[in-house]
Image (cartoon, rainbow, N blue to C red):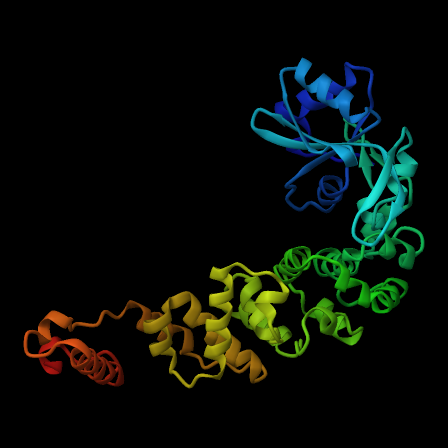
Length: 381
């Protein structure tokens, strides 16, 4: 099998391969770029595996006029920038010691040993510079069957890095067969290892959860996480029941997936802190969650919160009620978002000032909203 893609023959990428090959080193595309090319989905990062030591990669890149950046020297990774395009070049390696968060590695010459240390069989696919696919661990059948399967013994792979528990669910959401279900051995191993997630940084957990929730349809995976008590381990109090209706409503209304909107549907305790959300995201999450329980009509939501957040709250309310969305709800949100309050504070001055001015302005605004934004400035004054 051979992959064909524009990025393989891109001059910037060929320059990195040529720099390694002319130095007598081997170089192969690996991981996500190979997997995605075989699936026909967009390729982002370009990862290259090589038998060259990190110092050799640095020297060969500099000799070729490229820019090497030692982004992970101790783990054998050099980011080689060619024509402004970054390529992660990593020396063949094998783990010698792991603690569930990080690994000590030794560099090697074997593509088979390098493949064996990876997480899933579909991520242990390599391609030669001409696109010829190399499958040392039988990952192609799993990729074709949309089966996310750990390499070797699932429990052992997870003990090497507990983040693989979350990656298992994320990869199933992105590449797995929703109807076929999750790999039984992998699911059981993730359930058994859920306590290990407590050893990970909240930043890593938060980043992985956002990737999972950004998938086209993460609902089956998140439901499986809940059944395996993995969801409770990272987000106590979270419940996946509203997620599937929300995903359905998004598709029905043509609204793009949004990780924070979906996170709001899950609920949970101290979510922003547990996932290390930024202040901006934490405030938005609070707005969405508060809006679900609020009785504010859709048009007023749009006026006060804008079309995006107002629309998200309308979708979330409907999802929590089983997926029943009023036909004109989103139109009402957009109508409210476009409305402009016709009265200004200056219109009430100098007769009023201070707190009295604020109270009067709020009263007039409430009348205007109650009128469906119909009352004019003259009516209100």
